[in-house]
Image (cartoon, rainbow, N blue to C red):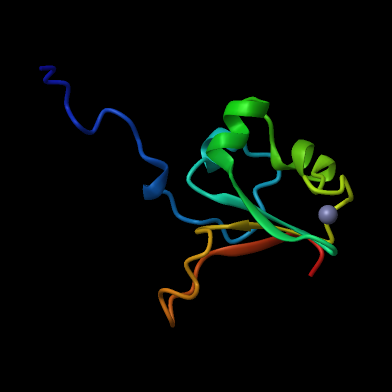
Length: 106
Ligand SMILES: [Zn+2]
């Protein structure tokens, strides 16, 4: 049994969702949130930024990764990319307004 204090690590869930796109913030600082990418043909997929940081590097920024995002199915450029606070919770919590910022598209 270890008795480390439970509050050793700052949890990303405690961070406030930004009001403006944090283009130059390392994605490790955004790791509680998701990138939602929409392909015209294949619909929307949400990627946890925690996973993207692990795969692409913790110091990468949205400015460096968002322009390179591609649809996993067809390799096409997404018509819309958003930074979202939660993935797929809209239906379960009517009236709940999640944080959502548009990076590409409208
Ligand atoms: Zn596609």
